[in-house]
Image (tube, rainbow, N blue to C red; front, side, top):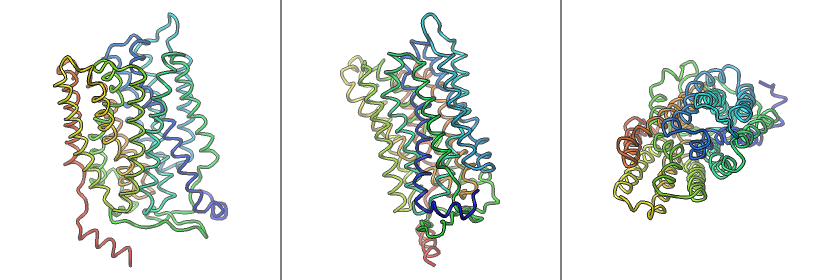
Length: 441
């Protein structure tokens, strides 16, 4: 923590640089965990994998992140965002460089499925540091009246990084090999570490409740909202039922999103007979639409104070869209190739709906916990989310063997619907009025 004299010149404007670092960090790691699955068709052929092996190696990324999120979050609250983010980015860059050098197929050399799975597991274990540390940094620099927008912009980096990698990685993997794809991802993480070293610093000071006090002369952005009141800093987020409900609901709602990210390309290729260009464009549209939706939803929920209601609405809409996709694939029969455009549109709409709520949910988690414990709360949410990233790719091949794509999309719809009763309900109108009155006082 720097002293007041060194942080004062940065003032409130420096928060946008911190947000930029958080965005770049999430985008660079998202390019790995969202981008590598977009090369699924080429992973399958390049590494000689079946659908079961493909599900295993893609699931390892999610398992690594899920296992490491909570330890990284606890370490972030103890060490601070700067140290953890720098360590994590540099270590992730090293792991990706190792994949490029030693675990890339070339000529007669085809690495085994176990070696690839271990390599991707390591990338997930190290990259799990990025989410909590960058989120805590953003929460520390923005007040409640802007946190929804700021966190949504940071979360927008996930589909932004995934969308860019969806356009680039399949082309690199198919034409230049996987070594080049892994090398580009490693370079992105290393460059982001440089930005973090230059610009990521602690704010002027934080009070006991975790609320940022702006530097002298800086414009205050503190506008406590009615959505939730953070618990005392002495209460661990691990003991807060409301935080667990948001985290578990987010995990369930991620199933349809992960299904699209990991096996959407396989569905479009195998079922719709789509080409590489059409597949890349569809997946990029999913990520681009999700990025726009996250920013808009963050700003909108900041104004309306309705984060929980928004998450519940996304749950219901996602369930309806994926049920429609299941029905469409079931009715398509032998003429499914002629309906590739319809499937692509529903994939885009469903993928956007299943992704739009992320920034809102993580803002709610951090707000409930307080900034000083935000690293732990965000890690709880990410643990549930990335457990989904581990389980979903493993489950899809089994579902395909039993009931085909209609069953896959039906289960995705059911998981989105399950999130509805798990997510906490919005505060009552009376409680919201009382909170606003306290804020005014």
